[in-house]
Length: 192
Image (tube, rainbow, N blue to C red; front, side, top):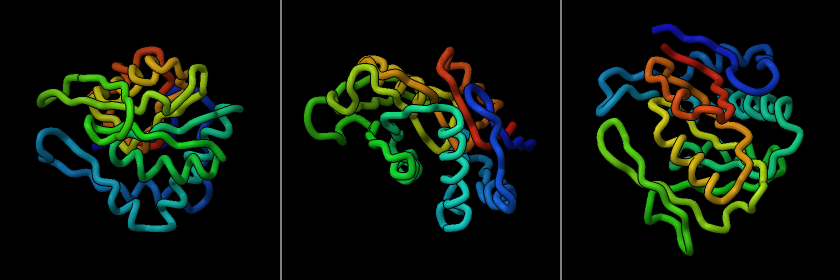
């Protein structure tokens, strides 16, 4: 299985600080025969404080170089909740949740979307972002792209300006980035 490190989409080239390359590229554990599709496990990355700090450093550097103004980081349920808050804190911006249906209090916007193995629903609180706010959506993995596309549609309903979809790992063979159409997309690591 091939692996590339780098960037796609909008923004400046990714500069990997010395010592970070091996921390990041060796940590994600790819699992075969993960039901119902191919999966990637970032647990080792989360367990290693040096590697996790390196990850947040790289994502922060990418966003600072790419976008002069970001208002909000939106994280996808559930691993986007692990990456998004420290990134938002570093950037001095807010963090909002995009969750599975039925998990958020108050008025929400929701969307139903197809998965490769069924259907799912996502929702966001109706007042999570204001019209025109500049938002970056984060998650750990882009596989088929359905969840990320649904998140983009939810934020579009709230009239947010989506700057980029940002993930740690992209499984390129599943062509999920194609579902994002004209929305800028960046992945730190790409696997075939």
